[in-house]
Image 1 (cartoon, rainbow, N blue to C red):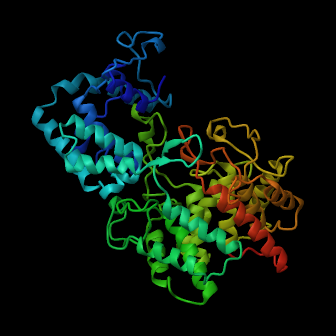
Image 2: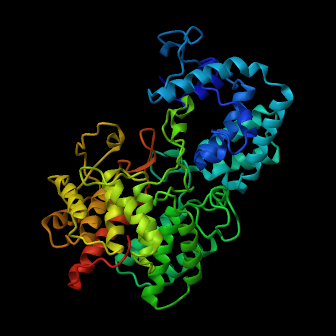
Image 3: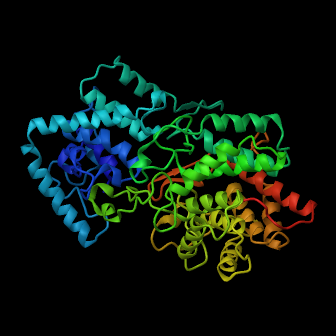
Length: 526
């Protein structure tokens, strides 16, 4: 069974009938906020992807296919005779009810009055237009941008229409032409300059670059200029009255800042100020902290883009077979926020900090690790949490920390490195070790050092792996071809090309610094 987004594409090209796609009627745009399904109840990425998709679902266009290409040979049952395209994604009772509702909606859809449908389409178009984000694109992510281009086409917008041109320009900016001899071309799902800049600053500081270096000052100014201080985005739906103050992942995406980037950048700016005895970034840090505190969810954790995005029943609808409809709190994001707040001086008795600590203790896996939502996977999550708990003043000899340390040590490979792939996101994971990677090895070593393990054999072997690992031809990046980051677990994985530079440099730099000054305490939040 192909997933929902694949079936949408197949339906657009006439390879499966539209009844083969779970119905997401465009009329959802007219539902009140109290209704069980409302766009504010799903994640930002789902919101921006779904809105143009419901336009396509309403219009049911057929893509231009002048060569008549088809894939009928792949179907064991001809698609026009297939009766069970849509399944219950979770196998639950509520999933079965949603599946029955989907069948009813398919029967009722033709009876929707044209005036209501027109009003719903207009509402969807207005939503997208308000968030087109200049030439950075709807949501700043490729799937939303591509769906919007197709929706505009289905609505009859000419190719030279200003909004179509702008939407296409946003996609073209994602195309990367490689300098390699093979002339490789690829399309990024989105750019990540704020995240990359924050990570690079941390790595350079650990490697011994002076905090007053003009390049770091320029990076700090570049980040300050991109802090979102006046624009109130979709996040305010759950947190009205909270002042904006975050950073987005991309160059510009003012509607959708996230607390992970904000905490990462806040820690980098704070470290610059601390090491230069200045207050250049004081106001930016204060606004960032105010926004992060305001975005804490009721359970003590943080989701990336929204607070309390926890309507878990929505994961049972047929449309949600990818399992990523929501943006609930996760351990890795919560750890980053905790690390930021404690690094800048919020104590363990601060209500926000205390609730975050409780959340992270509850989220620890039975084996001692923590889940990683945005990096692969338990190595990433465990690094994020252990370094944050160290920043928060947790006893590094406490049982829950020791269990995390034991888990990491047990997964070190004979070559001294650590490796984990996306298979660990599936139910019934077995934690099979995979090929060691520089970025995951760096995470493990950073976690162990934060836990007081600087002088252990495990850390020494991890550092030796990093120091011996081959570099790319330019010498500035460790060789790493495997994907170690995540868009949506079990669906979509990412490779940040910078990870093989930032994290190994960070880990080796920190290790050498701690050994040189005979001080084993990690002083920073990450």
